[in-house]
Length: 217
Image (cartoon, rainbow, N blue to C red; front, side, top):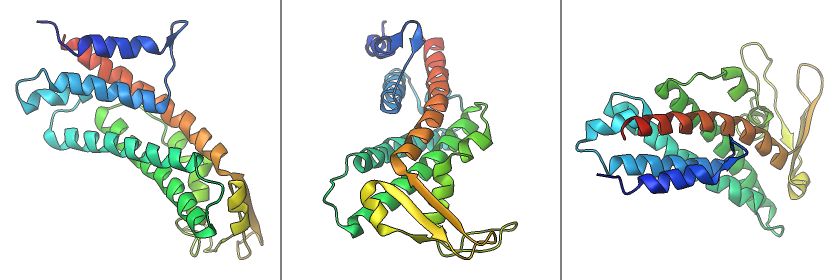
């Protein structure tokens, strides 16, 4: 019997083929993954048959993967809200938007690591951790009062609140071991840099899910 969702899945895949290359935005990739997994779930007889679609063998691993997909979808909403924020926001509201989006991207990084590790997909850890947005997040939205570590002397950062209205995170550390350290960066640019990395790995994930799905047809 033909699966009812199969035509939907093939339609979604076909929409994003451009000159033989699959081109998908993050939200579109997530929608495609959701469609494939949903269709698969409607055509299995027991829960154990769900696991293979995401290349795992246990319920714990499957649930971790599904929770990570949900987290990616939720944090995408946070990113969209930041990029579409109202220009008349108060300084306090701007702080919430900036702190929120920096930590949303960090949560995406962690969710992506769970997906890649549990699904057995190769990745470069330095690529996932090396985006500038994570250094900026640590300086201004996580460890502003106690930046540093085992190899770096503890120091602190102060944020220029007026720069928030320009979409920037701008500030400095006057007690850095170098004597002075500053940041002046556009957050939308940082998000775009990260989006290129996450899109690359999400395409690997959707390709694996699609292959697993086709193996069950």
